[in-house]
Length: 209
Ligand SMILES: C[S@@+](CC[C@H](N)C(=O)[O-])C[C@H]1O[C@@H](n2cnc3c(N)ncnc32)[C@H](O)[C@@H]1O
Image (tube, rainbow, N blue to C red; front, side, top):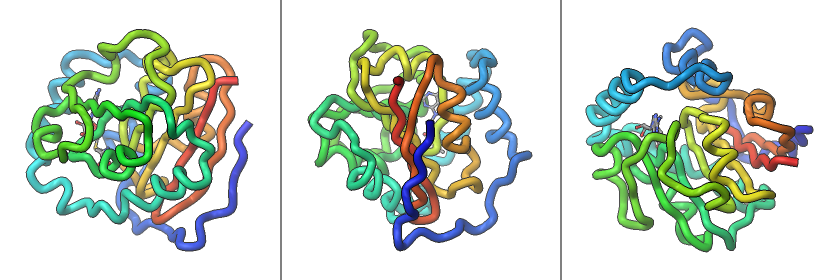
């Protein structure tokens, strides 16, 4: 079940940016719905983001990223006191907002270049989100901002009752995009969620039922 909250008062439509035929959009959907992530995928992705890293934060302003995270923190009923993992944390736009308000946070990304440009607000670890170096049931929350979904790994590392926080900061114009309902469908087992538009994007806070 998906509960749609009222949009945040400042929510707005994103400018056209990436449509359904965007190559990364297609990869995102295929990985969420069961295709295998290969070492070639990982190599191509880390090379791409290593190259983008130096100017990533300047070109994609933290204010745009911040609005849906802030709204999820205030209305998402998140387990803020718990242990959090961020997947695809990039240059730290999400970590800057989440780290001060959660019990603990670990940031992970495939790209060493992106991690190198991230702030020192939480431990950073280079790892592939398709095969995470964490025990089962290790986290109360997993945050993903514009990041490819690997449903089984997210489900594995979340504790029972844990929360997946999925954010697309340009809504359906985000290159790495899945609608909230598709995220729930892609996860193993039955999941429920609450979602809202905020800034130019949306957030989904989802739990396995
Ligand atoms: C679109 S960027 C978003 C970065 C950051 N979350 C933000 O919003 O600024 C996607 C990030 O996911 C990372 N990424 C892509 N595939 C990954 C994977 N399989 N495992 C871990 N990180 C991955 C990329 O290196 C990149 O930093």
